[in-house]
Image (cartoon, rainbow, N blue to C red; front, side, top):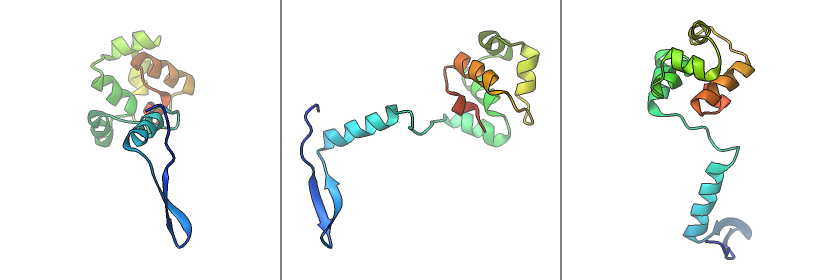
Length: 114
């Protein structure tokens, strides 16, 4: 809906308490919220479960996307042994490395931060 209508304001004790808007406008607001930079980061169930089992998020996402270490390393421009080290629980990758990995998996860096 491209034309916004005036919301109905419901008051309680003389103060505005609720605003009622048409359903289409509400749906549009929800869509815009999910498209914004501040939207919640979404994780597939498989990634969450792998992380709960103890896998780091890099490994969880890689496996969810069906990539081998060799494939992801090549796409990210790093060596496979380096990726293997990054997938260990105690690893603390640099932000620049996380950017490469996130770009190669088409996700955001925030998806890789525990």
